[in-house]
Image (tube, rainbow, N blue to C red; front, side, top):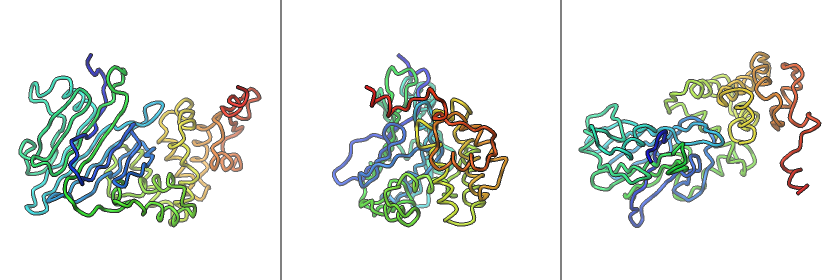
Length: 337
């Protein structure tokens, strides 16, 4: 049966001995080169790979979206520069391109990637193959490959949105946060977390901080773009930025909270953007506070956010799910059973 509304890609290839591999599973679980897994709970773009691989500088930028009840890969931007010759190729894949290629192949000149810029011809740089579950875009001589595995909305083929990058050259790996795939050791994210948030276990906060402070990524979602601007320009310093992330992160990275926001509001990124605006104003922007309060009303408490909105009294009669006398938490249900 066809992928009626299938979604994007993953990158899978035969991995040579000693190759470096970074992969995304389940749409948001990024396994770094070091094998450490990062939870990428953001509906925006980030540089998974920004790495020299043989003669090429390769950039792989996945773009994610929220699809109840989780995140999936929605697009992948690929940029390749041959640092020896100066030749370049830039382009992207999308849900539709990858899914249609899997179903129909090269019929009508179809391709799973669309070139946007550069002097390399796609067919001169890449070999493209596919299976019933994924598309592989490999450099002609096998220096690197990107495999993209689509998500099938109908659940007939594949419910796992995946992506994988493999470099078969032995170049030194760039550290996190320059690329989210990180270095071979992968220790730098813990050091960075301890510096930003004191508690080195709060890697989740560091990930969100680094997505929304990276001004080098071109965010095509206006809400992502505005969130980056607010965090980097309206927050005065790193202390304020860290505080804003601690206040707002549950909106995006706690499924239960995200589901509630989507149910009673609309786009979780809209609520997150308003929350950053409120936090970066020093909690003085009453309009942003009211918009946040309206979005989180009747949701279970957001640990750092709900108390601030209640104290500000910017949204009258703000209630949490716990205020409902008939509310029973999941934990209580388990205890009863």
